[in-house]
View 1 (spheres, rainbow, N blue to C red):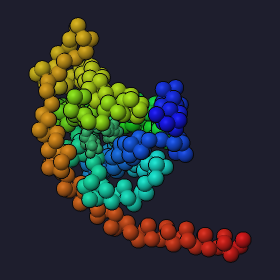
View 2 (cartoon, rainbow, N blue to C red; view 1 turned 180 degrees about the vertical axis):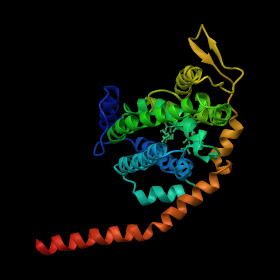
View 3 (cartoon, protein in one colour; view 1 turned 90 degrees about the vertical axis):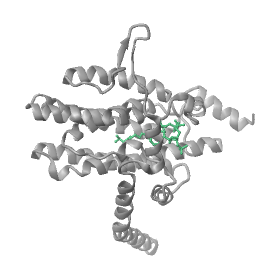
View 4 (cartoon, rainbow, N blue to C red; view 1 turned 180 degrees about the horizontal axis):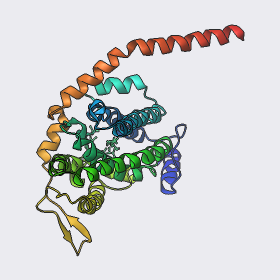
Length: 312
Ligand code: 3HC
């Protein structure tokens, strides 16, 4: 081991963050770029299923909340793209990787939002699953990523609560509204469990990422924590989780749950989910339509640069 490598390992073992100018192994850099950029892509693609409901929110209050939430996700994308840029990749390169299908984003956003209750289920389950993962990422070893996650988690926590509150209102409403809430839970439960990624023994990156403390918990550990928490929350809502195998295991001190449909998961990850094409087409179109904004912004930057050069 070289002295650089030893110094790096010592920092990791002593819980000292790795910062952009520090020496780091090439694979550590690549793993962080991969994970942070995929995370950033998930935030901005994640705006689409909910953005679809802003004009159809049932009240002004709900509309204002949903608008704020969707805008927060754009902000999360920006913090995360900025964190990834400190590792030597440009924003344009990352966007290109998303648009060409080279970079992944979370499988969950390839499912359609077919009723208002889905806004509740996404907030409660999808943001809930995201927080379970992201609270741990506040202590990830790469400094800029860890710091970005602190603020993101605060906002995700509001997102989770607003989703739970939407469902709470629906279950306290009439029979049709309660049915809408149950239907949304039925459709979003299993895709939410898939957000944590493949089982530990099928997760090629986990061992190294845990060693480098990029990940603090394994995929299965986080999934179990989520199932334990969400099952209790479902009881408060009076909704039934669509899993006949879900059962408290006294010995383990956790809920046992059924097998995820891994074929469906990999199909969606590979681009064949119900909305993959639509999501990527929408992102590409937004990029093309926004070209004039980027050009105008860059022209302004150039103009200011020229002015300050003349003044100097
Ligand atoms: N969807 C799409 N791809 C997934 C996936 C999922 N749910 N789970 C795993 N994968 C991919 C991995 O990216 C990896 O692909 P790659 O080799 O091409 O990069 C492959 O499947 C193998 O999985 P691993 O378990 O080995 O990969 P990781 O060690 O990276 O673990 C992860 C996967 C747990 C998702 C991890 O990357 C992670 O914690 N990422 C940061 C959090 C994140 O991205 N969250 C997105 C959720 S949505 C969100 O945050 C938006 C919010 O507003 C709701």
